Image (cartoon, rainbow, N blue to C red; front, side, top):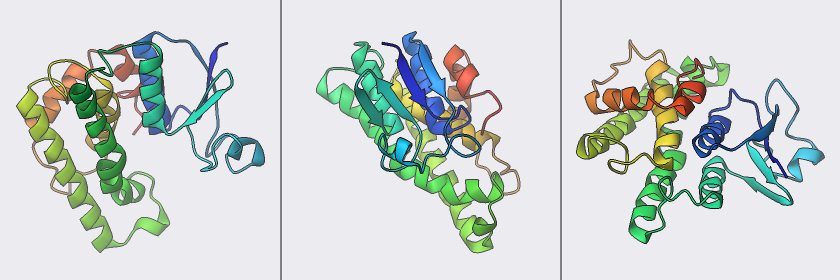
Length: 211
């Protein structure tokens, strides 16, 4: 049975899954759900994901939500040990950086992104915006330091799922209107994005004009 993905293609979390699918060479039927499309706060959708959020993956009778979990599942399903290693320490490192993206990095840019990119009226407090921008920059510098240590990808010389989720987050920072907010110079992160641009999955779902 063909995989089905519920979620609009403009969602950064949906794009994580789309990029992973492309790396795996998997076909998937996608349906538009989320803001501007089918509502996720309906009984039909919340039976699949009680959080009423995208993406949701349907694989036959199996239903899975949480974007990073979906990416891990797909890589394990296809036995792609290059993307998600089997050795405990190597796998833990990939998952560590994926968890950091979902928790620390995601929360760091939330207020500034909603203010500067989405222009949310509820996110226009100057002090909170300044704090949000500073936190966003600080986390990018953490990532830049890790990339300077590896000289290649987040976990070393080999591309992994950590690069899917962090590549999209770093691209969001790169295209955000932060020129007047003291954007730091992060040469390792810049070189990393140039490496990611060699991959079709990033070109199609990361550097594709979507913040």
